[in-house]
Image (cartoon, rainbow, N blue to C red; front, side, top):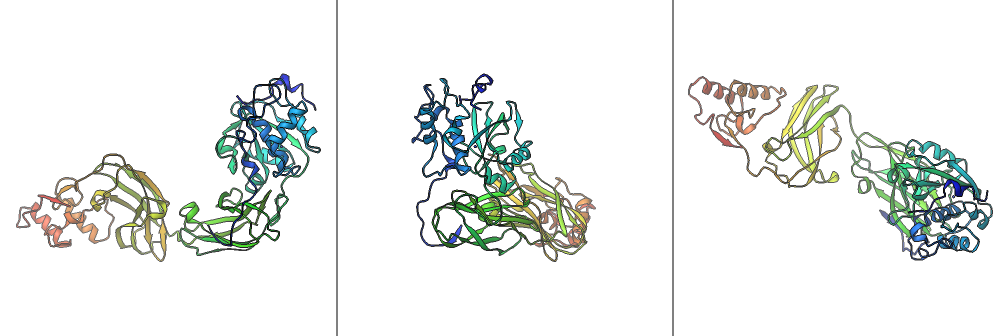
Length: 496
């Protein structure tokens, strides 16, 4: 169990990609990602207790990171072991291994213990996002108690300010940096603060630590319906070690997501470029995206926020998208298409594939219609499509008017059972209801008149078996129903 101070102990306190560049070099490690079980310090004892940093040192790990973040020490010469050893030599722990909160202030002049911002309780991480950011902006260096009081983490101030979301520095065995508080801990239990030093500056094109990088020539290019490329020149005039670099992207400029392009480089001037679909998959058509570049030296360097808008029309939209009857002969994918301006639709249908970026298979359902609202229902087995078992498929409806219109991407996952044989239907059973009636003749007439039809099997509509369907086929079905001379195969099984 991670060590925390009880109320009684609190009274004992003495009042934190594509890159056109040359070669790479080894860069300084990212202190934010330090783990308490790192072999360099995991065995250091917490005072006279049997506890070690590896087993119970999450709090001293968090305070160490706050000290470096505030600019009092450099990660090259100060680490978790440095602080822990000093505390051991200067009475920094109780006999049970609990930290005396104010002791780090004696080790690092100017790094002052403030006290509790929130007493022990249960606080929703998303609800308190704005409050925590407000405290960060006020100069508090905050460590948070999580996991029902059993663990401590620190707030990453630069990323928090840059994104409008609380980012944390953890010390667990997994990923410890570049993650939000709410993504790892839905609640937290208390907030304790130190003051002094500096809080990373967020002015555009200035550095947030001791080493600065500038960005210029920022641009977005090759903008299409689902993709774009962004690039810029990253200027490192003093050849500082760049621990990582990349970009932030999102549709809300106050809540951008970070994507890393590269790590551990030492360039002067270099052009960095990102093909966005390689990092985020398909973009949405007709959508404005915001982006900015970053680099991490001993602090964050951020470009201003820029934007671009993907191509696309909204004359036809799609809703009520659903896939049903997965893994049986009646599997279908359907939606309602809304033709808001009554334009001629040159063709419409569905793209699908096994990845968001690989929806290259096309089912064209119809063409040359000018309906307003109409239902698209694609019965998969009628298309002679064989899906793989236990596989996720992605799909997207489309309509081509004077430009392309696409639905959002949806998906379904197949199971163990899939149809292995094509269905056997009756010749003339156009609506596939297992009988030939006057409705089937009407379906052919409606199809020829470009009137929406829920189900239409073209092979079944070829009642005279001449390789296509026309009004003659509707007449053939009517004659067969009236027991007049017609194609004697109508009403008999026919494989689609």
